[in-house]
Structure formats: C-alpha cells, structure tokens
Length: 360
Ligand SMILES: Nc1ncnc2c1ncn2[C@@H]1O[C@H](COP(=O)(O)OP(=O)(O)OP(=O)(O)O)[C@@H](O)[C@H]1O
Image (cartoon, rainbow, N blue to C red):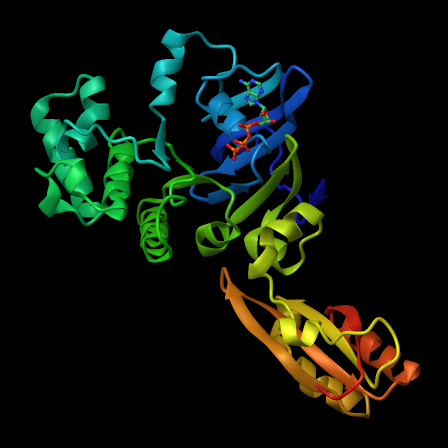
C-alpha cells in the first residue's frame, strides 16, 4: 500500500480514542471473490474521510460491515471504540443509531411529511412527540428547508430531498454521517450545494463524515483524507491534496481521469516519441514547491529559453497543487537534462511527454 503519510496514533493513546471508526484487517469473501481483502482504516473525530473505488471494489460490503448488516470473515470493526462485528441484533441496534446514513436515492417515506421523515429516527427511539418536532424544526432550519416541513417528498427537488435525508440522518445525533453515493443522482450544481452543506455541517458541528463515492470530484470538494480501494484492498491513502498532487497507483490515476490536468488534445496529437525541435515537459508541483517562484528561478538558473504552454496552479485544502506544461526549444540533450535536474531539485515531478516538430 502506498502511504502518503504515516499514522501518528498508537493504540491506547489520546488520539486513538478519538477514532470514530477503526477497521482492522477486515476480510470478507463471497466464493472466489475477496470483496474485502484486509482493510485497515480509521475515521478520526471531526474529519471527512473519502473512500473511493470503482464498481465492485468492495465499497458496499465495507458499508454493510460498518453497520453490522454483514459479518466479516475475520478482522475487527470498532465504532467509537466498541467492537461490533460479532454482536447480536439486539446489541447492534443502539450502535447502528450512532451512524446516520444518506443514500443515492434518498430513501424518504413518501406517505410522510418532511418533518415526520426527519423525526422518524427519534420516533423509533421512542422520544416524545414535542421533542421530535422541536428537533425536526431545528434540523430543517440547519439544512435550509424550514418552509417545507409540512410538504411531502414528491413535491421536492432531488437536492431538497437530499437535504431532508441529511436532516433525518442527523436527528439522533450520530457520531458518524455515512454518505453512500449521496450526490450520484444529482446534477452538478445541486451536487455542489449538497457538498457545501455537508462541509458546513462538518465545520459548524464538528460532524465526522465518511463519504463513499466513485467520483474524485466529490472527494476533492470536501474530503480531508482519501482512501482508494480496489479489489477489496486499500491501494493508496493520504491527505486529499497530496493524493491529487502525486497519485501513486494506476487506479488512482484512472479515477482522477479527466480532472487531472492534461495537455490539450490538439497538442497531445502532435507529440512525437523522438526527434522534433522542441521537447514538451509535464511538471507537477504541490505544497512548498508550488509556492516558490519556480519558473523565474528556472530562467535565472538555466540559460536558454523555455515557454509555458499550458497549465496553472489550483488549490485543494488550501494547498497549492499545479501542473505546468513547458516547451523546451532546441534539441540539446544536455540543456534538457539541466532543466530537468533544476526542476527536480525544487521538488517538482517532471515527465518528458514527447517532442514536436514545429514550435507550439
Ligand atoms: N452477496 C454477495 N454475493 C456474491 N458476491 C458478492 C456479494 N456482495 C458483493 N459481492 C462481490 O464482491 C465484490 C465487491 O462488491 P461490492 O458490492 O462491495 O462493491 P462496490 O464497490 O460497492 O461496487 P458498486 O460501486 O458497483 O456498488 C464484487 O465482486 C461483488 O460481485
């Protein structure tokens, strides 16, 4: 497994007791398929952890192990420090309430009003009606839907339905909000507003969120850390900005796909494997390397022209992350080697993409 940073918590220390979820070497097979093949992972209090993987990677099996609907063949599932994977139904029920869930298709009850949907978890807990209605009103205010309290789900837009879903998931004051592809059925603008709401609730209430998704854009918008799973294993894990800046596994690169900066197609089509009069470099920078005046320093350090032909610096989690595409004119191996050595000395990652016959 590629580890972008090492865990700093030791069992028993203060930070470890702050873990809302801890999975230890979780395994679950279905016949010949290893749906979970040794997953170890923690969700720390107050953080947003994203789990991303392609279809069949093991995400649903992981969720079912978390809420006790599936028993792992081996390994442990701790929720707020309590191991749940061998508990019976009766002991599981109160622990399940510690996890609020939101779903792709909202799962609202169509015959109940918005406020009754939101209050449902409290009704199941046997809370008095006055308390349920007060809490539902507070939560509808939190998600910006107070005026819809008496409406029925059918009269709401997808985004409004998901806001109701979020309010309902929070009703019983869970320790963890588990979002299972919660924006996958929404258009991009509604997705942005739901993600902004989740981030806002995370900041204001310190709510811990586990986001399960197959979309990197979702991870990029709000997650603090990301774990990439494939074939039941974690193939890469780290702070979102660092995984975006330096994806180590092929699966992560492929999931990043179009949201990783690329050379424009018309330029990419002109690339030759050898020869040509200019060399095209891809230069990836992040963190300190992206804050430094890299290009002016390059110009000062290595005589000879270069041109910036595409790219720029973006920000993920307040960290600069960027990709610059440079054209190095002339076909002098020693000059090119000097440019590359300089860029690498500044912690940039450099890739020779190819050569072009005519100036870009
Ligand atoms: N009950 C089951 N019986 C047999 N095979 C199963 C069962 N549940 C899951 N699997 C297999 O385990 C693997 C992981 O499935 P899982 O549903 O956890 O993946 P996923 O990442 O949630 O996929 P998707 O995004 O498509 O929902 C898949 O190969 C799947 O076919």
